[in-house]
Amino acid sequence: MSGELTWRDAEKSDRPALEQFTCTGPAPKGPNHRPLPHPRPWEQEAQTGIRTRKPPGATRDIYRVGTTADGTIVAVAVAGTLDEPSYTNTYKLMVLAVATSVRGAGGEVADACMRDVLGQIGHRARADGLAAVLVLSQVDPHNEPSRSMCQRHEFTSAGVRGDYEVWIRHIAIEPLRA
Image 1 (cartoon, rainbow, N blue to C red):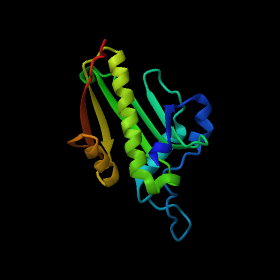
Image 2 (cartoon, rainbow, N blue to C red; image 1 turned 45 degrees about the vertical axis):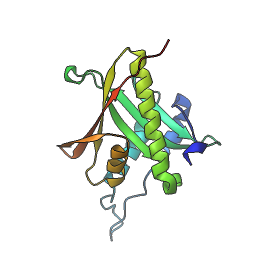
Image 3 (cartoon, helix red, strand yellow; image 1 turned 120 degrees about the vertical axis):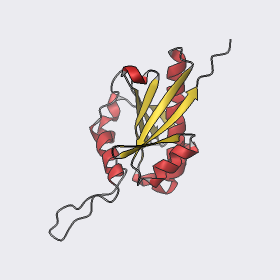
Image 4 (cartoon, helix red, strand yellow; image 1 turned 30 degrees about the vertical axis):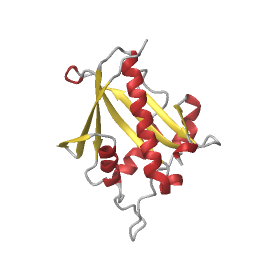
């Protein structure tokens, strides 16, 4: 599936599609038709974040979408720099999600999305003259697909902080060759 996708920066014109982006089903209903807790709250959190975040976002954010040949957005990734003094040269992967419409190929699409956003982080770091960057991701400890994806992409678990498991990856930036 990922070979058929085009990766690009999100644009203001993508807002209507992103406001409808679906990466999880609805929460189940209880006997009185009230919503019960969502079985995968991390998916609901990602979906809400995508639907409410307005691209292109902050000037330093990396906001990427994967689209099918007809322009349908089926994957989203958002990363940004951390501006705290103790986190220099650090990016945080804030969202990475795959639409339910391609869920059967979700791992393949998610991996392609991760490769794309990590590549964009590398390009940005190289343009900024950095020799290396640290990428952080916070994953719900029950979200086994995301935990496995972090492992496949050479992230290392740095333990649990609050409600999330922190994953880190150090990326050495290759200088441009003359």
